[in-house]
Amino acid sequence: MSFKFLKNLNGNNTGHFAKYLSSIKSTDNLSISWYPSSGEDFRNIVILNDVFMESQLKDGKKWIQPDLFIFTDHDKLEFDNLFPDEMTEEFTQPMTEMESMLTEYADLSGWDIYDDDKTVVRIKRFEWLSDLDAMVDKSLASKEEFYSGPQKIAYMLLDIWTEEFGEFDANLIYCNTENEWFANKLITEDAKISHITKNNNDYKIGETDESASSLKNILTKLGTKYFICDSSDTEKYSDSTYKLNSIIEIPEEYWSNKGYAVFEVETRQDNTI
Image (cartoon, rainbow, N blue to C red; front, side, top):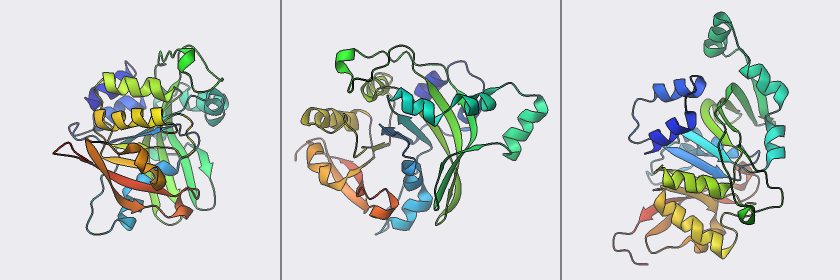
């Protein structure tokens, strides 16, 4: 299931992500959030954290916070700009035992990957995991900028500071892969993804009728509980096996004026619309 999928991503690495996996007490109800075509949009992590969601939920609704966030984006240039060599090399260079202890427990190192007057996202831990052999047929690539060969994957522990909701940590895996390839990997390895965010600017997942149909299948096959998207898009995703119940309309000022909403995915017992 999902834990096995994460162990496969980690491979034989013995660093920060391996330590995170060993710290998970219960793997049965592991909540994983996937954000296709995430780019540099870290609002997903801020919004889906319970410090924000519990301030917005009404009528006694409960929220399940993701234990782990996964971002995917095929844009290699943007990925390399987001994680420049001069910073990642500093984080991944060999350390003495004392340096390792200071980094692990005192949080003395880090770099700000996002910073504005209301939110700061700082990387406290960073490591490269083994490259993904994410080969995609060029005819299936969504844009002309197609990169063949092994694709990078990084794990990081983030320190999130918000003016309104305080400070919290988040675990993130960022894969420089095509969404379609990664979706297939999730399905074939029987991973369960509790939260999926559909990027309003995403050119592939959910933009066309064909893509919307694919996303419907993904919601079903991955056992998704929460779907985050533009509320005007939901007609594309109606399906005989589930219905989408809006539980939150996210105020525009919290997510780049894009009008996102959070929907609870309810499986239909009678399999009818």
